[in-house]
Every structure is written in structure tokens, then in C-alpha cells.
Image (tube, rainbow, N blue to C red; front, side):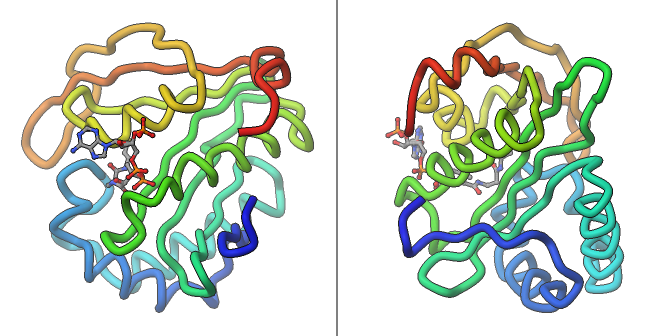
Length: 179
Ligand SMILES: CC(C)(COP(=O)(O)OP(=O)(O)OC[C@H]1O[C@@H](n2cnc3c(N)ncnc32)[C@H](O)[C@@H]1OP(=O)(O)O)[C@@H](O)C(=O)NCCC(=O)NCCS
């Protein structure tokens, strides 16, 4: 990944700064992130960072903050790993300032290297609401296969949304080479 872009494993020390970023982007992010309820608070964020740091240590999942030119600009997760099937899924968000610079494609590429390399996984999904055009562009750009549609699969602040399922297999990622 480029020198200006860095992933740092989730740490409770990052909670205040991460919360400030979420709060500043609250309205924009709420459009697509179901966990960002109106009552999402600093306490919830602190607990979240503790839980994800513990999961990182146990290698149940991997969550990191994204840093662009030395400033925190978002987060990305390899969600709960299914050990039997060696599979997981990826979720992500960025601040308004960091959008539109290809940041998420590069960061996702880094996470896929980790998932298929160090974590030895076989299959990674990305699920995007059908209306989330920016998000759907990420797996497409990375060469994921579009596998199908999950109807009304997510409750998004008062409405059901359909999810488009994209997936990448380890052999496909290795064959594709660096992003
Ligand atoms: C989704 C998100 C991470 C995208 O990251 P990003 O680094 O800003 O991505 P980019 O701006 O480089 O754009 C990605 C692609 O979307 C395309 N795009 C940008 N705006 C678009 C729009 N309004 N309509 C359609 N496509 C658009 C870009 O052209 C690019 O495609 P390309 O690589 O084929 O050129 C970011 O927008 C975000 O955090 N959104 C809110 C949270 C969210 O939706 N998370 C995902 C939940 S599944």
C-alpha cells in the first residue's frame, strides 16, 4: 500500500478520535450503515473498540482504522471468521474528506492479502445495498464475482434493503496479482 495510507489494528486508544469522525459524518454514513443508530454514543464506540481489539487478538475477526496522510479517515473489518468454511466478509466506511481518492480499493486489497495470506481464508464476501453505488464499485473494481441478490436482507433505519452479494476466492485473488 502507498506510504500515505496505513491500516492500524483497532485499539481502545483510538475510540475518541474515531467517534469524533463518525459523529462529524453521522448523517452521511447513516444512509448505508445499519449500526449507526441515532443513539450511537461515545460509550458505544469505546465498548466497540475494546471488543474488536479483543477479537483481533483472538483472530476471530480483524478490524482496523484507516489512516490517510497521518490522520484517521475511516475503518474496515474482516467480520467474524467462519473457521470451518474459512470464510468471512468485509465491511467499511470513510469520512467525506477521504472519499473519491480510491482509498477503499487500496485498503480492501490490503485486507484481502491479509485474509488469504496470514489468515488462510478461502472465501471473502462483500454485501452492498443495491442502491449503494459507490460501495458496489469497490468489489467490482477488485474483480469480485457478483453472485446474487438477497432480498430485503437488511433493516436500514426503518426500511428493508436488498443486498447484492459479491465474492472473491483465494485462488482468484492470487491469480489476479497486486491491485
Ligand atoms: C463506499 C465508500 C467506502 C467508497 O470508498 P471510496 O474510496 O471513496 O471510493 P471511490 O470514491 O474511490 O469510489 C469508488 C467507485 O465508485 C465510483 N463512484 C463514485 N461516486 C459514484 C456515484 N455517485 N455513483 C456511482 N459510482 C460512483 C467511483 O467512480 C469509483 O469507481 P471506479 O473505481 O470504478 O472508478 C465510501 O463512499 C463510504 O464510506 N460510503 C459510506 C459508507 C458505506 O456506504 N459503506 C459501505 C457499506 S456496504
